[in-house]
Length: 301
Image (cartoon, one colour):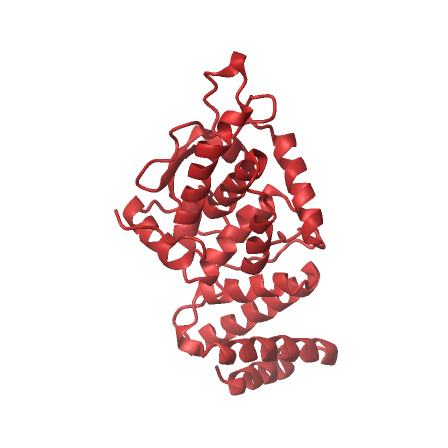
């Protein structure tokens, strides 16, 4: 990606827009940083996609930059690519999905892949509770489930083909591919953990994940577990189901998944973009998941 294009844009802002010196310095710094990012990843200007831009912005979140700083950098990118589009340098604008973020909007915290591994390693799988916790965390991160979807799972909702069936918002059912790690964790829990939580009066409980009372794990119970694990990780932010869900999405995008496939797996029309929700067949989702998610390792059916 050429720094000459950035220099041309700064000249345009100076001559035709009359921006103040401080603004020009900030724009130059922000765009130079993006150019360096692209060069490090051997990304060329004509080939940049929305996913490339989103990955860059997510990286800024991981670096711990303030929301206002990220919003400024996003605005710089949007202005730069709008200029290139006007100059017929580009046909497809990779920042067309960006909108001006609210200054009060807090971007979601995410875990790195290494932090996810550390988190899962905290579960003491020699104990029934550890087997259960490991299975819940693997499913929450491995399928990007909302907390209500995770805790709403019943026996039989994960099939032998490697899909989990869940009910999302508006009682909309969807199938999500699940990797071998999550499947193995759930199987280990079913074989060596779940029966330890069952009570004589609740032998017909359909819930997959049980509390010490033998009933369905509650939101409060799961949040409490996450809080304890988050403290052990010494994170600078609270560990929540929201964190795991957005880590799932971010890691898929970083791994090369397209935005619409991720939106489909999340069951949400908008994950940091205003893309129109698009239905994809489950075989395509399975392929995308296997290629992109760091803990997929799915077997071919």
